[in-house]
Image 1 (cartoon, rainbow, N blue to C red):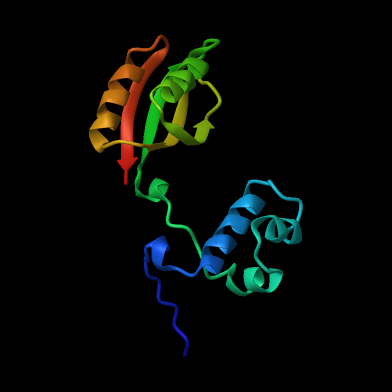
Image 2: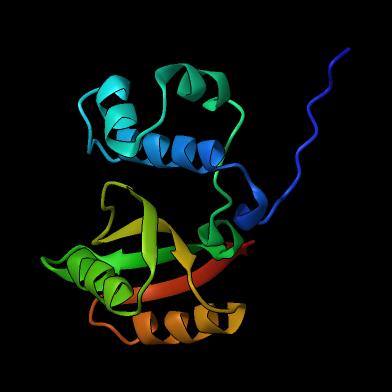
Length: 146
């Protein structure tokens, strides 16, 4: 039985081919190359090396260490209310992951927004206070945070 075992290794000690495979994967994910062959050629790695390592090599992203929170809001059914919330979250450097809105009932709609924060959980508390002050925000709750 071959069990997978994940490890974190500083890129400075890895063979150059591994780093090139990561570059090719990033190019393909960002649609910067039309094909794996074109990306391999541009980066300077053989296609056989790319195909050998592509499913086993992943970049450890700082983003994975950031906090993901979910906000629950009750918003008035008025033009621009949801837009102002989203603009405010953008201005607070939150990366919005999902937005779910219900059909308005009795002049209000529930909205659930999941987002990624760059800072600490304290940032989420401050963000909640800022959003609560916006026109049309009836209620806001912090549902969860990782």
